[in-house]
Image (cartoon, rainbow, N blue to C red):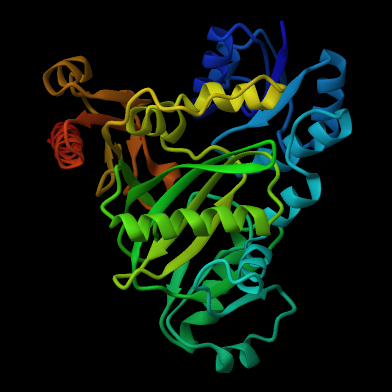
Length: 396
């Protein structure tokens, strides 16, 4: 029985841990939270901060693992790569993992290799002369942390007067206290999910995305199939493959966000060397493409054969349980009845007495609605209807 170590054991990692158990692997997990949900399903676990590479490596060596991976969090990427490299296991090259943690280095690499239609990009630290930089920029621009995830600290800047404050917010949200500035693109946001096997990138899907209004830019949901023309979707997939190769991503899951303009220009705006969050792995990819993403990700991690053939594509849409205002939960909807009536899956962590905060980042979400349909428009409409009913109940 092969042993696989999952870096992180939160709500979304718990799906990976459960699937690994179903596949017959012995599953170990680490997380700084002693009450992490995934610990309930793992064969063994340790309370270790997932950014502590040496402590996680010591645990991995002690357990004699056969594979390691992280999912749905950027914070475990370096640690997973470090363990794989130190133990000679399948994994992302550690130097590539470090590069991908820095959004500016990503942007610089993509620009130099002409991977997409990138224009201007700058890195900002506490030592940067913002006064000089202000004059060089073509506004509007997007300012965001050089590391981290979940859209925290990202803001649009329309004039030089706003730049300093936006950089301060972004640097405060960055572990390394650095920010990145790039051209603000007027386009629609899409997601891309890929798996790199034996050095070869396989783009499983381009996903429609819905985002909050400025200034927060947080995800609200995804859908497959996309609404792009075949030609534009093919170009987007080519950009994804070229980006993976240019960045030296040799292994594992890759989640990307991109903006696509009305005239078909593609701008890759974020890359994570791990499975995407927000139910992409357990629901969106398998329901939308017929590919068993999580199972293949696990097989890849332990060196077992991967099968990316489709069992039949479908239409799927998700909506985050994201709400427009602050409130206290006094009573909950009948989730079972909603699932039966609308044929959806609802995943939530709401309890009576919880405080709901107006949705600004993914941390303000309370779960997910997953809807399927004959057409993507049907799935989208169903997910939105269920979200509206839940919202009305909570704010009644």
